[in-house]
Length: 524
Image (cartoon, rainbow, N blue to C red; front, side):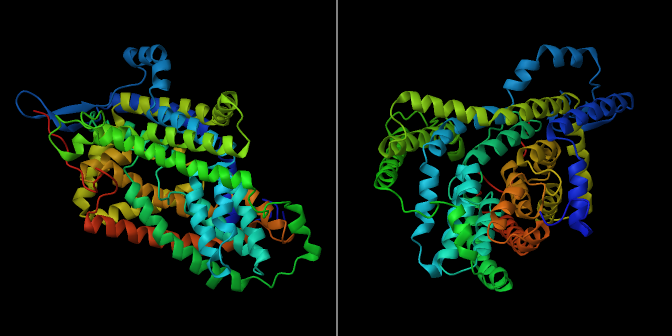
C-alpha cells in the first residue's frame, strides 16, 4: 500500500484512524449493554416516563410507561434464565439461517459465479459498463462471491475491450457495494434487516410481522436509477481521468488466470437446468397461492393485505427453496454435485461462514432485548416523536436525515446489521409514531448504508478491492481508490435521496402489502 495509516492526512486519514480505534462490533454491543444498564438505573430512579401511544386504561387515559432498571430482581432473573430464548428468538437469526442454507448451495456449486460471468462476458463493448453494473447489483444475492468473482473479472473484460481495467473495477465495486441494496429480487439482506425491523416495530405494535418483500419495489427502482448513474460516472468522469493503460507484458492478465475463459458446456447446461428449476419453484408457489383452499391465503382476514400475510411470510422459505433447487440443478449438470451428501456439505460450509454473524447476533440480541426490558426505547421514541412533531419537519425531511445519518455512521461501522440493530430500536418506533411505516424507515436506512460503503477503508472488502486494482497499477493506493469512488458515492446518495423524497410524496407501495405511511392500531 502506498501510504500507511499513520501517514494518511485530512478527512480520509482521520476516518481511518478513528475507525480503527473502535472495538469489534461484538464488543461495541457489550459496551453499550453496560452503558444501558447504568442509564436504566438512573432513569428508573428519576421516574423517567412517557404516555404509551396506543394503550389506554379503563378510564380511557393513556397508560404511563416508566423506565425499568435492568438491575431489578425481575430483569436480572430474566437475563440469566431466558438467555437461550433471547438468542434463539432474535428475529433476524432464523431468517438469515434459512435463506443462507439455500444460498450457500447456489454459491458453492458455482451457479452465482457462472451466472455473473455469463452476464458480462459477451456484452457488446458499448454496453460493457451497464452490463457490469447490472450484474454487480444483481450479484448482491451472491454476497461474498460478487466481490471475489465479478470485480477482478470486470477488470479483465475492460482490458480485453481496450479500456482501462481500473474503470472496470470501479464500476463493479460501485454496483456490488454502492448498490448493495439495489436488486430486482429480495435476498438475504432483506431477511436480515427486516428481522431487526420486526423486533423494533413490536415495541409499538406487537402484532406487526416482517415481510421479506417489504422493500421489493423500492430496491428494484434503486437498481433502475443506479444503473445509468454508474454508467455515466464510469464513462464520463472516472475513465477520462485515468491515464492510458498499456499492460506491461500482459502480466496482470496472466496473474488472473482463466477469469475471462468462456463457460464450459457443462456450465452452460447447468445454467439452463437452474433456469428450469427456478420456473418450477415459481410454479409451485403459484399453485400454493391460487389453488382452491390455498394455504397461503387467509380467507378470514378483513383486508387484502391481511389475506396475503401468509404468502408474504412464506417468502423466506420460497427463497430458500429457490436457491436450493437452482444450486442443486446447476451443480448436478455441471458435475459439481454428485449426490445428496455434497448438498449437505455445502449447507454445512454455508453455516460455517456465518460463525461470526452468530457471535454478533448473540450480542445484538441481548442489547435489543434489554433495551426493550428497560422501556427506554419506547420512551425515547415517544418523546423524540413529540419533539420532531413540534419542530414541524415534513416526513421527507425526516427520512432524508435518516439517510444521511446512516451514511455517516457507515463510515465507522461497516456492518449493515450491526448499525441497524443499534439504530432500529429507537428510529423505527419513533417513525411509526410519526406515521412512517417500518418498511419506509428500513428503505431510507438502506439508501444511506449503501452509498458510503465504497468510500470507507473500514469496509471489510475495501483492502481486497485495492489489491485487485494494484494488479493493474502498482502505485494505486488507498487514497487513489477512495478518490475514484467518491463521485459514485455522491451521485448514488443524491439519487437515493431523490427517490426517497419521490416515494414519500407519491405514497407508492414499497413492496407487496408495504405502504409508506403507518397508522397506529388503537387498543380498546
